[in-house]
Length: 280
Image (cartoon, rainbow, N blue to C red; front, side):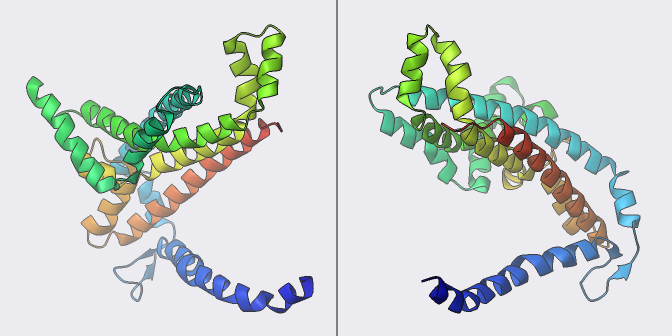
């Protein structure tokens, strides 16, 4: 069997590697190269060194978007994971209609981000109109509007992952903790939480990366208004690249900085949470 697999190894591997190189590696490396140039197309790139990167870190729009995105990510990651975990705990207690609730909570994740953004824009503006305000009157309204939208979309998805983790916790460990006199809170903290850490790792990774990469919901809900105060990093990169002729290199440099920043954050999160995982 092993000989047969080795015989066809290259036959199946080479097409996959070629597809990966064409679809990801080459565009990625080309993007890094273009971040050091001034260009409008890939054929007229002029090398400018670190000039694009120097501008990125002095651009007030980028710094504002960075601060707004970081604050949004912190609040969203905490609220999404906390509420999703509480829902998962509730729906693993064997209450009636559990499967119906799981389906209902998961459904928002099936709706596209741009559609979801326009739906919540109508809902939230409809509420704010009663107070003579809209989402774009103040960045505070836009911020919390995005947090509500993100929570509504991702809580059900994260809840399903937490449910899978909770269902893998051995019942005999829970019963043993009860026999030893541990109350529900102590059992949750000392038995359940350490055993669902793999689910926590996955959910934190997904919520952190999705929070930083949020684009279409941001575009539909506020489009950065008022005065670019609710522009997130992905939307700022898009506006720089497509909104200003001759600024494509700066937009590309922002994209590279964005990639490195998100990559380092999720890598640190994975290293920290993986160390806390225990075998059941």
